[in-house]
Length: 101
Image 1 (cartoon, rainbow, N blue to C red):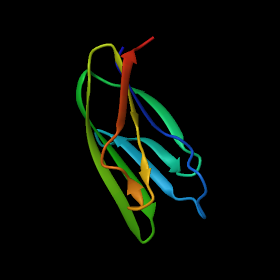
Image 2: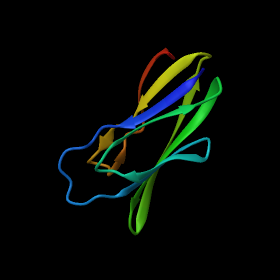
Image 3: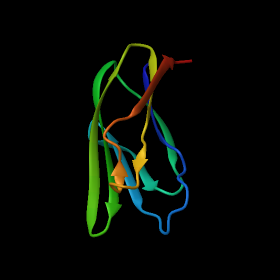
């Protein structure tokens, strides 16, 4: 079993909540609150995958795209990190890997 875990820990103080959409290869895997943080695990085939983030900041949205490579039997954890300076997730992910259970 090969899995991708995408997470974003609950942030500190923010005045208002915004909508976050996370996609893997174009398919939504999370659509919800920025302030609550999220932790999503999905089944994936081994190989390269695209993870996309979109922060809905009306009237704009902020997007990022990341390429991840998952080995057979791996649980790859991709943690998003938010930059207050840019009002978006950073351009790189914190990646850690391990074997699936």
